Amino acid sequence: MSRTSFLYRNSLSIVLITLMIIFLAGQFFMGWKTENKELIENGQPILKIGEYIHSGHFIQATFENWESEFLQMMLYVLLTISLRQKGSSESKSMTEEEDVDKEPVPHPKAPWPVKKGGIWLKLYKHSLSIAFALLFLASFIFHFYGSLKDFNDEQMMKGKPAVTAIQYISESRFWFESFQNWQSEFLAVASLVLLSIWLREKGSPESKPVDMPHDETP
Image (cartoon, rainbow, N blue to C red; front, side, top):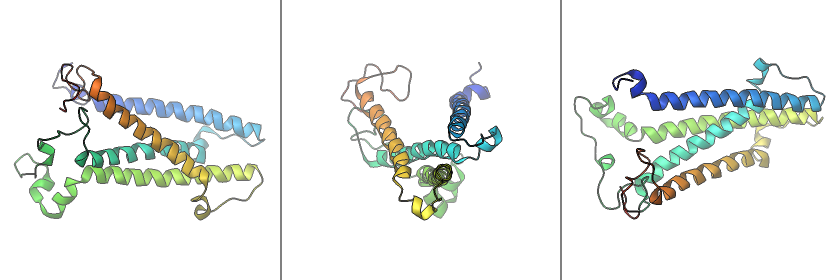
């Protein structure tokens, strides 16, 4: 494959998005089967495949996971600005100023907010964390909506009254769904930060050079 081809230059994002679509499709079909199995056991009519896509079961399961991913990335981006981990490939240098800390200088190939300056530059300086924050907020809202819808569907099957959004926000089930995902995301990031101190993966930008001492921060 040519190094100037579109596929070569974008292969990482293409593979990651493709894998996401494959696993999302797997989640969808397995979730559909699981939900219909439960409906049958409760004497309820099964959902057609088109009905499942806007069911509380699917919406809750999907956005519950997206929510935790975006929260993790937002906080990781923010925490790595000022916090350090000696010897980790995920940490900034302990002593030296890095390029990401320098004030942006307008030049012909700079992004347009850098050339524009003012409020646009101020926003652009923090656009990555802002984007993750907005994605987290949107996912949190959809997770809440899906979880509430799924909970009320279960309430109906049990012959119990539905609850309102105000009532459900204090329901332990919703927060259990969130916390179980949030903690696992930060465990994964902490594992990468700490394991990269002593372990290596030749060729990966997430790893230090194989011959670099453990206590040295790249």
